[in-house]
Amino acid sequence: MAKKKPLVCYCRFWVDGRTYSGTIRDNSVDIVEGDPFTGFSPIRLSYPVDRVKFLPPFMPKRIWCIGRNYLGHVKELNNEIPKEPLVFMKSTSAIIGANDFIRIPEWAGRIDYEGELAVVIGKAGRNIPEEEAFSHVLGYSIMNDVTARELQKSDGQWTRAKSFDTFAPFGPALLVTDQMPEDAVIRTTLNGKNVQEATFSQMIFPVQRLISHISKFATLEPGDVIASGTPQGVGPMKPGDLVEVSIEGIGSLKNICAN
Image (tube, rainbow, N blue to C red; front, side):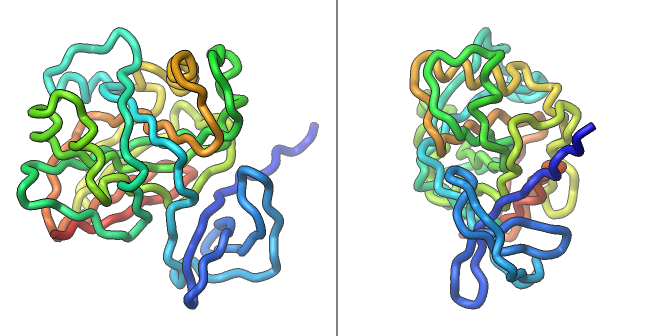
């Protein structure tokens, strides 16, 4: 029986004044040439994890987001359960990396964290059947879908509330695999306190349904990211807060809030 290849966590990072691509191995980051979309190969040079500054693993082409995809989150905001995936978009200009500052605008009211699994598309497709959806996935990462909650309610549509600069922390790595285990846990902590926790089996619409649904009206392209919705437990952040979103197998996305 053939042995399964170990999963690879691809990343981009900054160290000693230069930017590199790499793969994470235990407490080291190994430099690679190339990227996961076109292929990469190792170079015999590594850095300790605690010496590097992780960047977003790549700049998404588009960010497709899913609202109200966990039952607990639907209930905590007193919303109705959607009959089909609720799709909106978030500006790519909101992207920041791990340990970058989330800027809290004083005039925008309550600003919430929303920890989410980010699905990365690796192969283009339109009208993708659900049973073929995973063949279009390159891998998975983490996104914090930061939201100006009061503006979201007052605007009706969600573009402004979701797209402030710094409102899309993304990373720190891309787990290169077509499927995440349904029992994998996503967890958010605020100043060390556990505030969100769920498994992906609790999604109302699973990943393959989301991919198929979006592809019915828009061609999905390599570099597109689908932020697949947040579990219950969303809440406000203020300057000085540390928010951390972690997913088993991918790592932790940490950011500090600031004015």
